[in-house]
Every structure is written in structure tokens, then in C-alpha cells.
Length: 212
Image 1: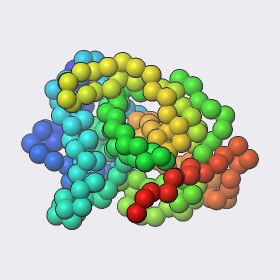
Image 2 (image 1 turned 90 degrees about the vertical axis):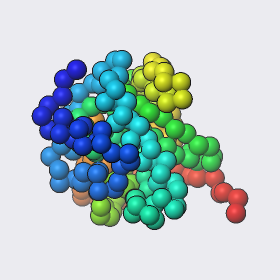
Image 3 (image 1 turned 135 degrees about the vertical axis):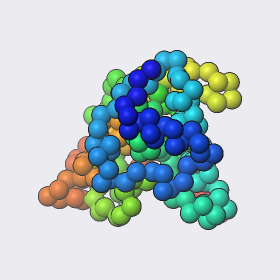
Image 4 (image 1 turned 135 degrees about the horizontal axis):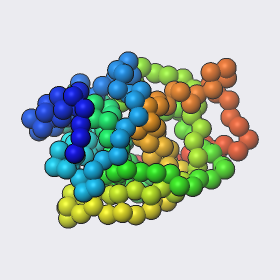
């Protein structure tokens, strides 16, 4: 198991924490967010499992209004290890899809192996826990993706190798977090000359109306 000096510092600080705060998430001026991550260990080290748990717990906590208010958390649907200073290929997703179904994934060493030609985007644009300002513009991503991944299950403590097939909103979140593993931020993908340009093969994500 190998970590660089800066990761050891971050890791030691994280191990002491019971929960992540918004202030623990590094922002887009931090050089680590422009670095490429290394594969996580298989099997995972105890330190890597701890990092996954902290990230996943942050997302769960961000759905709890009382915890959000008490600890001044910024809600999110995804969080990648580089965002907390750990340059390993790991991220967590916790989100409702367009149909209102709930999904939770703790993803390790992902690799996109195929994707659709069709693209999709969020009409409101994308945001990021590491970007604390509004960036106007559309981010066009593959509408459907297939990715080989390891998934970690905290209930069974199992690490499972599988292929995820995602589309629409979940595919967008996956690709957003996947970009973090390669030093990219969402606004890098916005057309600089025409931020609201929509190519012919891209269509917006449409969310089903939720019952009041």
C-alpha cells in the first residue's frame, strides 16, 4: 500500500473524524483537483474503507435537513476521493433518478467501457461541492454508459466486481465524479464560446413530476 506524503497527512486527519464537514472538501483552486488518481488497493485497505464511509456518510447526512442546518453542510449527490485530498479512484453516489427511484453506490476503480453516441444534459447546468460559485453553461455527457467497477457494500462488507449500466441523470453523476479521478472539473466541458450551445444529439434529462 503506497500513499504520498500529502495523502498521509489528509488520511491521518480523516481517520480522526467521525464525519466530514463541507469545510473538509477542497475547492477548485486546490492543485490536487487537477491531478490524476491512482487505483485503489484490491482488497481495500482499512484506510480506504474509512474514506469511502466518510464520503458516503456525508451524502446521507446532506439529505437530513437537521444535520445540514446544524453543521452547515452543502447537499450533494456525489463525492469523489480527490475532493477530500485522497488521490485514489473512488467515489460515492447517492441520488434519486428521473423516476424517483433511490440509488446508492460506493464505486472503486471504475472504467467506462462503452457509451452511447446520444448525449444528455441538465437544463439548470451542473454544480460541484468543490466549486462554491455558480458557473453558467451546459455540460453535455453520454446519455448511456457501461462501466466496469468494484462496488463496496457496507452492510455485508463485500467488495463486488461488476458492470454498471447507467443512463440519464445517474449517468451524468457517474461521469461528473469519474472526471474528478482524472483532474477534470465540470466547467472544463462547457463550450467557452457558446456556453448554452446544444448539439443535435443531446437532449435534456426530464424528471417525472413528484407527488406533493
